[in-house]
Length: 490
Ligand code: ADP
Ligand code: MG
Image 1 (tube, rainbow, N blue to C red):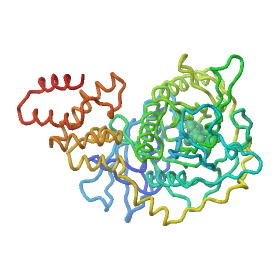
Image 2 (cartoon, protein in one colour; image 1 turned 90 degrees about the vertical axis):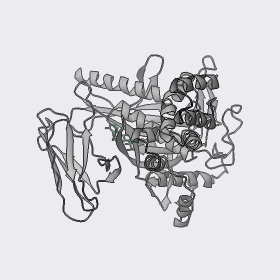
Image 3 (spheres, rainbow, N blue to C red; image 1 turned 30 degrees about the horizontal axis):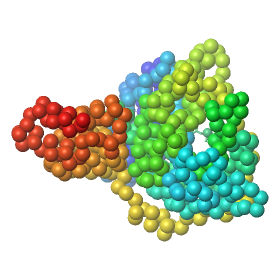
């Protein structure tokens, strides 16, 4: 079966179709097997075809015919009447260019000790007090895999619906840098522990799905300190050997906004799973954004990688700047060179750090000191049985149970702390929708203005619940409730 879409000459190309789409009721529906799109009309994009191979039984066809958004109806037997419909809106072009972004995120795993040694991972210790002989690969030492790090990788793999590899391989990535005195980083290369999977989230209330390429285990390097020393750099090796899960996406994102929402959803997920503390200031969750631009319908452009973005705001600013910079270059007739760049928050600009190495420059080879990582199905089953309810599943349940709108349910599950607070307050008053409104209104407003997390709210969930109960039974008005809330807050 196929879906054909015609576009006016020069109209933007269709973004990749997500594999899951919402139906008319907003529930997720799998659109099945494979899809691809091609541009028979050439790069001018006169006509493009979307092929969807349906994985379910029967023969189904769908056609759509629109300019900027695609609307098709599918009526597979699995989903009876009413026919399910979706609309895909084209992400806005920037100066006539389509933005393409893929992410590599380093999530520091929350183990007490390092990935291959017993040294502590505690943050903030005196420099060079927590790097042991194994972390530095001194002669005569051997690395030993930390079971807790593998367990966390499995938990992540299960949460994103990925394949947890029954066997994966550790490899040495060789490079010179002052913060890596051993001369190589232990990582995974050809066979990573987590393969595939996807992350789902909302962008402006619309569901979006990003496919993951892989997630692999690796050790962190040390840190160079440039500010504390005049004319010198300090080296702190405490971080050497800290366990990381590097999570890599397909180049599925089409705007800085989508990128930020993806990063937020991934952050929520790893913290929710308890595999990462999510502390971005301390570097526990660092994003590298690979950015390129292209004319609609053209092949992927050359990417530049913006390294180590440690705040959602910087992430958006950095991508926006980078996109404009790349378009300027191209419009000036210059080619983009593959490179690694840094974002300077003070100037708001990205700056080239180095031209990009290719994988073959690293001379990867299997680490002779580490056997293959074998994960038995029993272990995966054990981890699966101990998995918490995931934010997406909880959001679905809250929608069904409490009648929350899609967006509201997503907000109430933006973090575990928020979900706990919401559920406690809703239980205290039996008014879930009012609780959600208050949390997204008054409470968020105050938390944001004071830069506080919900866990630091001076008004407890029980207090908010009681207050809302009094509004609901007509004892006090909304205005009076707000005054009481003010008094409780201060
Ligand atoms: P590496 O940076 O390790 O050399 P990869 O080739 O695996 O490696 O790609 C890393 C990231 O770059 C992935 O997230 C991928 O989606 C993204 N990416 C690849 N090609 C492009 C492109 N043309 N534009 C934007 N992102 C891209
Ligand atoms: Mg990279």
